[in-house]
Amino acid sequence: MKWGVYISKVVKSTPEWSPYYLNYNALKTVIEEIPADAAPDPTKEEGEEKLKALHVDQLGLPATADLEVFHALDTRSMNFYTGLNDQVAKVSYFFTQEFNNIQQKIDNAVVARSSQAAESNHATHQQLVTLQIHIESLRDFSANNYTSVVKIIKKHDKILSVSTKDRYVQSILNLQPFHTRLGDLVLGLGSRVREMISLENIESEVSSEDGTSMSSPGPSAFSLDNIRSALPSASSDALGSTVPAASTMTNSRALNNDVAFKGKVSKLVLCVPVRYPAGPDAEPEILIVKFGSGGESGSLIKSTIDTGENPEEAGIRKLKEVAGVETTLVQKLGEFMSTSAKSTLYLAMVYQVDKELVEWKDGSNVTRTWLPLQEAIAILEDNTSIRILRRL
Image (cartoon, rainbow, N blue to C red; front, side, top):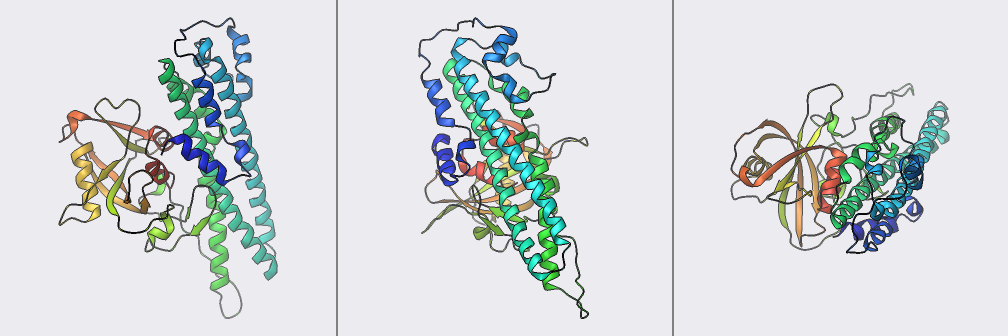
């Protein structure tokens, strides 16, 4: 499924947020309207005049931001980047408004929870569940728009035979609040809400004989930062509906598969290898592989299950053969029906990388690329892999 088709379906599924999504197809049209034989042509605008024409002032960039990507543009790219900057600014504004809205509602819920009235507590619990759905929806909104930006610039660069993507991503996109505040949303606000929901559940189910409530901390959020020991706290579909997690992954299909299917399926293991670079501020990284001269796109490794081995072993074997890494299974994410491969069900598993080999079976044809989560999502072409990584 092409990204333009996929994101159009996502946007249509959330009409109340659709005006605030990056308009991928409109930007694609701008690119397609550039004459095929158009040659590079310097713009008349320079310096501040050029930045003003490109609406750079809307992006909320710090004074120290590297703006060379804009200074280097020729006339062919001006309309595209003016439109892109408008779209990115729109996404950032909406994300910031929703983030602040969620934060205020959490603060209000904390105050309301101090009331001992049963009716008030019940109402607060419902508000918390709604907030959890809101947070997960905004998380997916952020990830979808980040991916749209990267993919539309890749299309622009390919058609014009230029290289602007990496600099725009590093200097502009990665400074936008819908990227920089994603951790605050998921690990900050999301963790607060989950803990409050867990506390509400415990207090409603466990009480002492004298009527006082007992409580304990809620479960940890599932993320790359605590992947070794955490279980998922919730699962969501593309934008909204939530299924509360069970204490164990006993019903992984109900929790994680967001594409309906019937009949017989072929099962493959989809491997998500993770490493943890040294340093207090270092982000966990996902291993993406590129085969031969596959260009900028990459993929996660998928494995068949040979006779006599279980799915976990199949993933470990394939990762060593194809990517040259020795790994340990740390989490089963569940089952995901492919949206592109017919009747194929992926068993998604996260592996901790213990050792990177210098030489391995497929080493001559494979390039290993380690990327932070959002950047990994952005270069993947397989929508099922993208859906799976968004669970992390």
